[in-house]
Image (cartoon, rainbow, N blue to C red):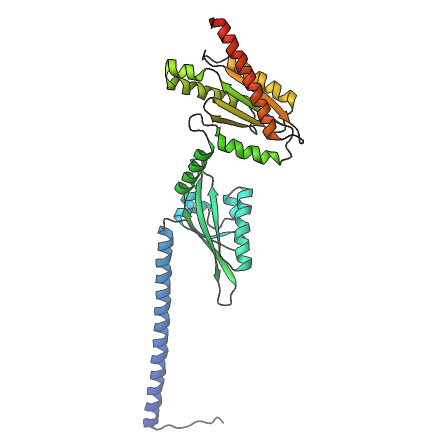
Length: 323
């Protein structure tokens, strides 16, 4: 037979009041939890709106390189829709080599739980874009990396300005080919290279002063530009074509022996003869150096040969004009 206790009316009222109190406490706790959850949802929603509306590209990864989150700015930056990126792997968005390099950084941050700052180039049909990207780990309460989040800042304008400054410092402004400074740097680099034999061509535009005096400096500038264009059209991609200053040009030809450079100079003369500018005439000298030769001496020899040809041109011109 079960034990039970008969309560008086007063005792029953006391216990009922206590039960109501406990129920009220539980209801208050539940209300508080609901409030906290609502607050968190609201807060998360606000933060997501901030991320979505940010003008800076923001994106996050799972450990396998799948995009966990991307905002509109990131999608616009890579030229894709959000739907084409979300829950896709990085290799679905970028070419293999680009994706491999990017994922290597993400993988490192997951493994080391440390932040990295990198510079990123994003190829676009309308021109490359450049970003400084901060890659940060997101840690759980136990200290494990659950997500890697990336925040980028576009630096395209700054990067293009830097590239333009480099171009100005290495290129001749009138002709667009390399300048003396770049030529001399390359000459020094080649001295210790394994690219011998190395040939050097020195070319000088004849009678530039006469053209300037007779027709004006614009006519002389046009001749210099034509020379630069012809040199570039004849030389190979790996050759360094430069204007040393005034009417003097030079070309560095790595892995080019005497026979090859002689053939190149013949093509250069033939191309010059095809030009419509009647005042366009170059004095050309060239020389070749092997591993045992000093390139400075090779350049002097090419310059001497150019000067000798210039003297012969002048003698021929004088004999024709009668002076």
